[in-house]
Length: 76
Image (tube, rainbow, N blue to C red):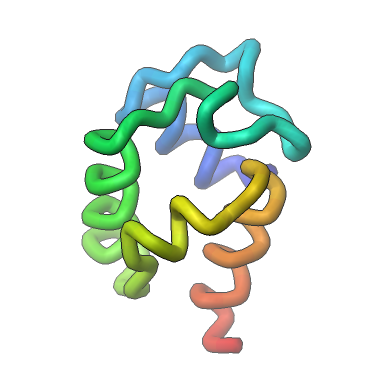
């Protein structure tokens, strides 16, 4: 995972760092419905990208979520 995503997940959303790995599911990492909404809003505010709640929920792992965010940030 990129450092930006890791910092958001640990510092802002307060998810446990020991559960954050590329192959961790969102449930295992500690995501709940509020964290999904908060992440979507944070990504729009910080990076100017639109990642919907459904896009986040559809990511099977944190690694896939990171790839999605990275591709949206690069405009792909």
